[in-house]
Image 1 (cartoon, rainbow, N blue to C red):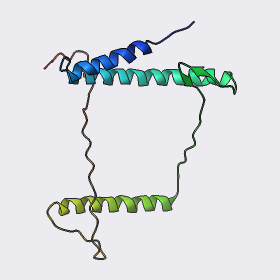
Image 2: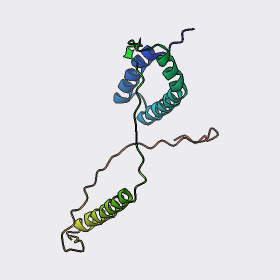
Image 3: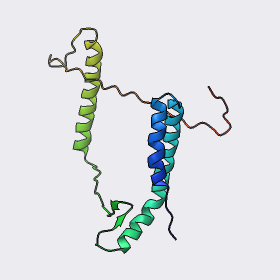
Image 4: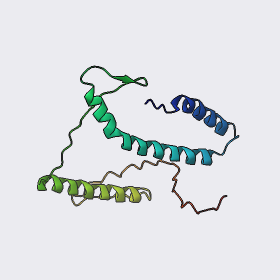
Length: 146
């Protein structure tokens, strides 16, 4: 059984929809919300298929496996957790210093420096602002449209 996803169709539809938004022929917010829905559906589908794909790939041995223009391989990563009081102490020190730097930023906005317990000026934190759209899934029976 061979099942193909309409990837080629999507690679044509998505640029077309973007072009419509750029020309003012489609609602940017509606397209964005639909893309968020699509992204969530794809992420969920990938989670569902991942273990099957790993199993299938491992059955094929060490030779290169090419599917849909991708070389497929199984990769494992190793992560560590630390149960070390010294590490936790350092993390707490960093966190408290970050709080001081944020306060120093607020004072710096009013032209006031902030000093630590040794009389050394605390360097203000530098804010990084990211602007995006937040999409919250509403219940199916929600019918208000603006």
